Length: 451
Ligand code: GDP
Ligand code: GDP
Image (cartoon, rainbow, N blue to C red; front, side, top):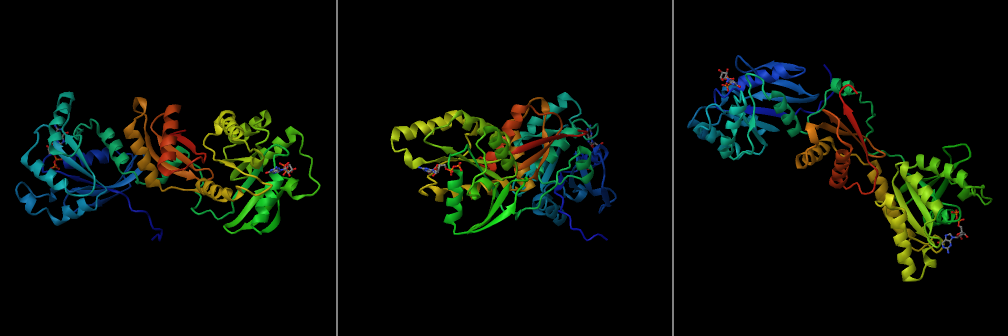
């Protein structure tokens, strides 16, 4: 016996009065589904419970079958078994019969279901053709939302119904086989990565990087260690701050008296990009007295493209006394670095130390977001909401989503078919806003079966 504990599967319970087609639907699902993982002999002669899988999403399907007492008895005594099954459900499928219409019994079941807490999906069965499908609107009167049509007998809309079911149980786990068939190979990084955050100080020569570095190190009265850098001539510096260790990447030029020659633009650019690649966050330093120069812009573009969160530091701010000049420079940053419009901007003086204390909390926050992992069920809820608010064109749909990686937060979307780029941007925005990711770059990966 395996000792590995599995997350419990979401439970989908089918209820409805006798003869609406519960067993037929249950058997239809068995026929439709890609794989029956396991089925248990039920309480009665029929199969009553099984582990189902649709598009790789696993859930437990329970048919309350003959357990539901008929007619007027219902209010008085819903059987314990049904009651327990319904209360523990993650989704209830309330099945009705469109060929008969709304009956008193349906109303009795509906009024009971309106009082239970799990979400209820109203399904009208026997919608064998278009005309029958239109009959379902009568069931709006049950007060359980929009009726969903299906023909359990013929299988009409059964796949759509399963799509709908799995989108309503967002935390249904993916089967391993399915993940493999999609070619998902991301490593799942455990939460709470304890490696110290890595910070790159980036900027043209003479903007004040070394001064800032020494100020940050000095202010902390911190312990400073040399570390072998990521490249041959680089030196990283590990600084023990009050909030824990921070690594400043490629500080060779800032630590040595005799500075290495990084005045050539090309060389400093290459160096800067290497540092950014090795970092969790870049502090982009600008000499405010010079404004945003063309060289700043070029460097900023390349750093931004590296996909690392960025803080913009307007250094030597104490030299800009005039209010109009200050406004002009702030506007220049907005205009010339428009592509970084999510990045926080801090005005500091590395020389006097003014404003430098504001850096730490902003830095910490940005790094936290970069390492953050959100639970799968929340990701799926956000995606489902976004899709409900604004569905993609042509029936394209995200069936399931996970955050496959952090640094930066990377989301893998399992889709039934290609999603337009604008729609992906919309989903990215929805994720960013729902979880408050701020200016942290997010990555979306899209997987179609067979990719
Ligand atoms: P249960 O008592 O709710 O489990 O209902 P059953 O699954 O036993 O079905 C009751 C009757 O309805 C059977 O004769 C089924 O063949 C029939 N039935 C089930 N689904 C459909 C359907 O989609 N269309 C039609 N026309 N008949 C159906
Ligand atoms: P780096 O080449 O980017 O590392 O720049 P440095 O840190 O060597 O600074 C270049 C020059 O700018 C030095 O003369 C610093 O004293 C000066 N400097 C740095 N920060 C400030 C500041 O906030 N205000 C003023 N007025 N000068 C600064």
